[in-house]
Length: 317
Image (cartoon, rainbow, N blue to C red; front, side):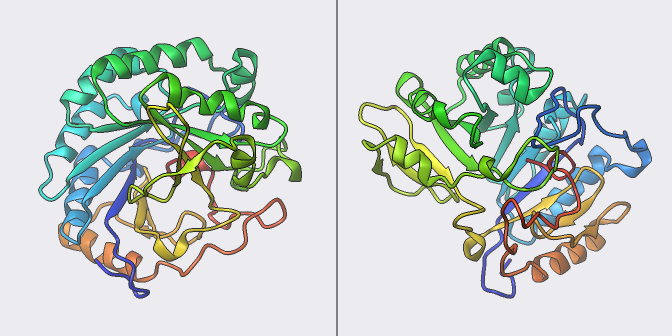
């Protein structure tokens, strides 16, 4: 479907839960969240109906997110039914990786084609600090399970944070030389205000290129990341710059939250509820959301906060 600015919307990010087994400082409060009533959240049947309605309007790519999607008890069923929707060509999933030792093989069998894994540091103490309760050892167990399951084009997502991991850019980028993975550096977005991030935390991704002078531009893959390649590397380096160089003009995505709200833009307060609707009702709401997609998300920096009105775990990372 084409929006009012001529952008073709082909990508839906579906959050299946607001819950997570970590408490990352840029994403959610230390105490977790106030769990909503089961009746306020989308059922599996509603999620799949929404995917079908979206597919009827031209959505071909689906990414399943959270919270942490793997804490959802029926995640395998959701993935399997979503992958079976006509016209959905690719189902991907973003995870912190902690539960992949138990689920990686089953996810692949259920139709998940690609995985994105979140990793902000290679230092065990810093990993526990940024996640508040996580273990780097558990991440590596999940990463190993993903490789053994045969997932191709695994991507590692790293939120670039000044004063925290900007001294690890080279080490993180070197993962593309050690494994068949892409490493994507994502600029920290001013969404959840935990008090942990001052102005110096918001670094532009140009800092990555300064640290990697031997990186050369690579061909784009259709995504929002600017791609680079290191000599001898299996994978690529990606730079995602929503703050310093937004890609709103080519944005092709919409988001569906776990409580049934379509967000046409991550940083906009606009939401359109799908909860409780039939196929045609969802289809009409999706049309409204797509046609209301803003031209850009507005200024984002340490001073100009996101207007989204939600923490990242309540939208879908």
